[in-house]
Length: 117
Picture 1 (cartoon, rainbow, N blue to C red):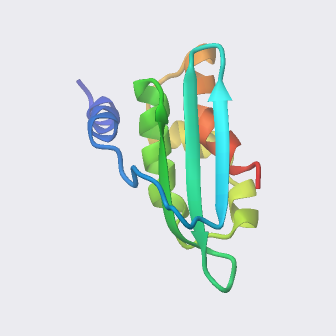
Picture 2 (spheres, one colour):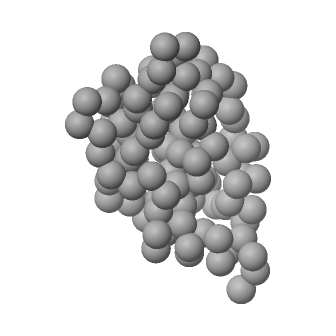
């Protein structure tokens, strides 16, 4: 097993920022009906409209959960506009493994959900 596969398993088994923010400033929901992934992100914004806290939860495959976990770590301190600039290449780099078109949809669901503003 390579380092990236181990990292995906670690994020799947112990996802970072898992949970809910009851008084979230933004609640963003996304789903991938083709495989059943379903996510909700909760964002707390500071006075500069930067993400000061993020939590997320849902039911999803290992790739989607790992991608959500990694992305949630990365975007703390960023604005919603900065998230719009994150692209597919960053998600692929985070995961570090080849992704089939079906798995790519799973990996991109967290980013697509967060880009809904």
